[in-house]
Image (cartoon, rainbow, N blue to C red; front, side, top):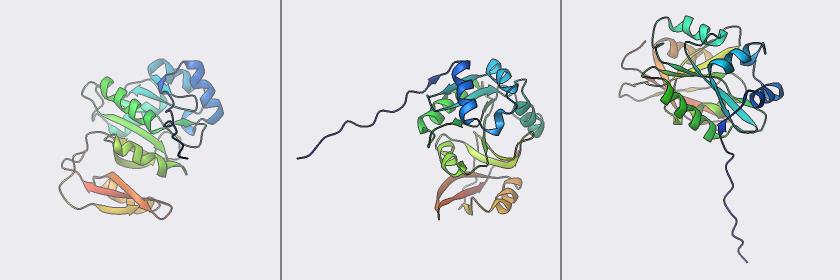
Length: 209
């Protein structure tokens, strides 16, 4: 006998209350949300989106928070007006729902008012699973560097226009080669499995920042 099963239900992604987001931060918060005294400032300036087990914040680049200020200091005056910042995900489950990244990216696109949307992903063991989700939403990896007092972070942004050329494939673990190419104006725009991790496709951009 063949048993027909209903497709698995996706967790609903919605705007979370401050209390819900604080609960997730306490259970599985990343270093980005330390000290906890910074989280109320983030919530006041931005929006928390997520599910019962995963969430992130959508912040304006002009927000009065340490993380946004650190990104502004690195960018200088480039693409700040109307821009948005997606914070690293807080995740208490095993996997980050791809739908959360999709909805947060769409929300940032509506809020950014012709500015650039940036996303921060901390360089942790789960980064290999996160980067392809952002690539599918039109983000490109532009830098690998510390942000504020955090360990190195992947900094991704929208609007990367590559030159029509074959990509340079670099294993995610080869941080030195990856950082060198990013510093030369390349952007990672795609990925493929490589061993137990990823290889990133880096392209030179038409206009380097």
